[in-house]
Image (cartoon, rainbow over all chains, first blue to last red):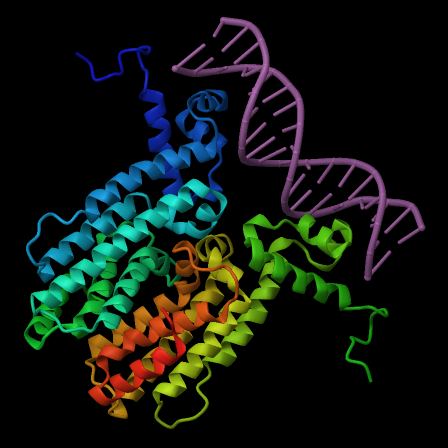
Length: 221
Length: 221
DNA sequence: GTCTATATAGGGATAGAC
DNA sequence: GTCTATCCCTATATAGAC
């Protein structure tokens, strides 16, 4: 009847999931380096010992959260079908990607330190970047094939890289430039806008106008 | 005759400077969060107590290094004269900026955490970003005035933002994508290339070809 | 200016009772 | 599954002798 795992006690899986959820919230809010296992236990009103019953160590928690994130990102990066992409498709996909990143934004906040300290995270993040790069390149090539834009191969490659870079670090940039810390979907929307502006100059005139009109509706910079 | 401060002993200022130099080297190599005051003292073969004679705390060291960095960056951001910029001017200025950043790359490695924890750093970094933004916008407008490129005001604004973002986070991006960790001037050159590629699509045909030719000579992606 | 010694605090992690 | 108690270690920072 219940959705709980069968082989375990009454509240089995419950505490474990609560630890992950609360850890995620606290990591996102204060930054992973500034949240200790004791903080997490305090917030959950459980003992530190209990926390260590469910997870070997702090990195274990981080890795499980990362796995969740990776799954979400894989979903967001999946190109649904084989028809040529439109600008609206790209806008939507970027929205999915930014949303996935936002949910696990602690990963991006301290990305270099996190991936430097933990080999597993490093490998998995590299894998995500690789997939994202392939996706970006494919989309740009699709736009060229659809004759929506014109670009040479080197231009596509450089632009794909810049799309990854701007996407990966938009949230950090927004913080250090003094953007609001709150979710404020506007901040993400502006990130999407910045990415679209990487593509805009390659568009044919009609589509470029179309995009700028689209953009003005969504963004007030 | 000597450049030493007059009121102090023989080696005055010497240890202090050595602390700054060694701290910088260690921060750059391992990341500031992973270098303790004890590590620094060990490396210098002085006592921790001695270190704390020269600096109130670790943040004090970081702030002094940041001040050095800010001075260097101010220099790199200074536009020499009032004539309209050429593509070569931009290439050169980007080189100066990237070099200044590279020397103090620890700041960029953990930028969000650093600026979140320390109000002073946050304010000063915001100031640098502001100056850089003004410089980028001015240069783009200069290119338009020189009729080297064509762009609307919104295009210039978005591109200026993307220039800041790519410049600020290029080194981080290069690390997480698995780029070499060594100085390897090639890595910085590729960052400069990525920034130039933000401008390229706005250039008129002749200049765009010129830039791509220029770029091919410098970069092997 | 430099050292030794030490205070203080906190984080990560475990043992063993319940 | 959970708690209490605790250990170990490391980091920052200070006091006081030299």
